[in-house]
Image (cartoon, rainbow, N blue to C red; front, side):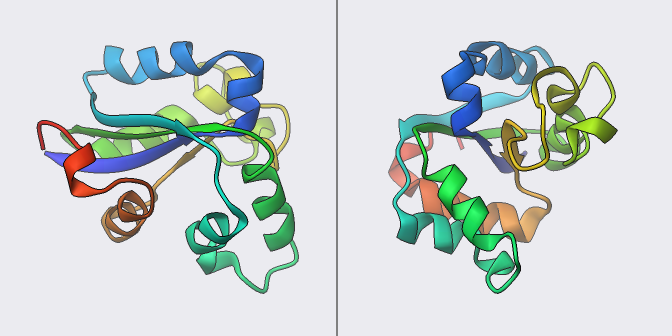
Length: 139
């Protein structure tokens, strides 16, 4: 079974849509094996977004993801990464079709509700940022 990290960003928490989003993943057969609410520090955010360091939007990403609590979750299932990416929709919600999470809930590219790992290497790296092994169940 493949594992991936999902982050329900501060805009999802503020708008109260986290339960609906989590339910979508469960309804598709993905199993949550770790879930927690936390407030990221600037240092944690910089580690998470390290691949974007030096880009013009880096500081804005860090500022937004640290602006309020988020929900971090690891789900597992067959083809979990590809499935969650398809369910999330395009990064820019204006390009995300209705029926996808971003198409239904997000309003701007910078406040696009959710993050999901984009491949096995990033999933492994990102899961370690947010979870210790003992915090994941049934894996």
